[in-house]
Length: 114
Image (cartoon, rainbow, N blue to C red; front, side, top):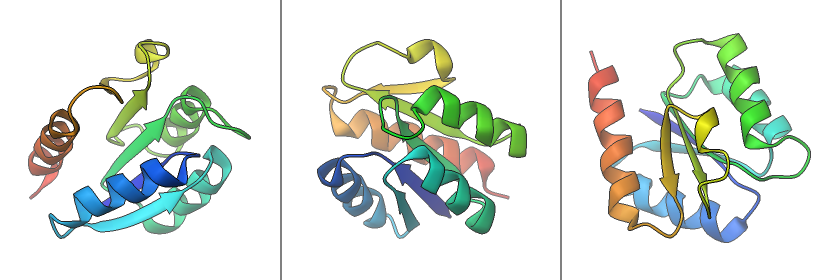
C-alpha cells in the first residue's frame, strides 16, 4: 500500500514516514499541496495524510483538489489544534499519541485491501 504524507515540516514528514514505513508501506512525501497533487496523480496512493496549514496550498484546498480527482480517496487531516477538523472525514491532532494516527491509518488501509 502507498501512503502520501503531506506536511511542510521536514521533521513531521520524516517521523511519519519512518513510523508508517515500519509497517512495510511505500511512503511518498510532499512538502506542500502543489507537490502533493503531482504525487497523487502519478502514484495514486491508498492513503493521504495531510497537514492543515501549509504554504502554497493549505490542507482544506488540497482535500478539495484530491476529491475532484478521486472522490473515494482516503484522507486523514492533521493539525496542532482543532482548526480545520471540519474539512476532513478523519482527523488527528498532532499533540495526541502517534498510536492513534497509526491505528486510524492502518484500519483505513485494512478496509481498502481486497
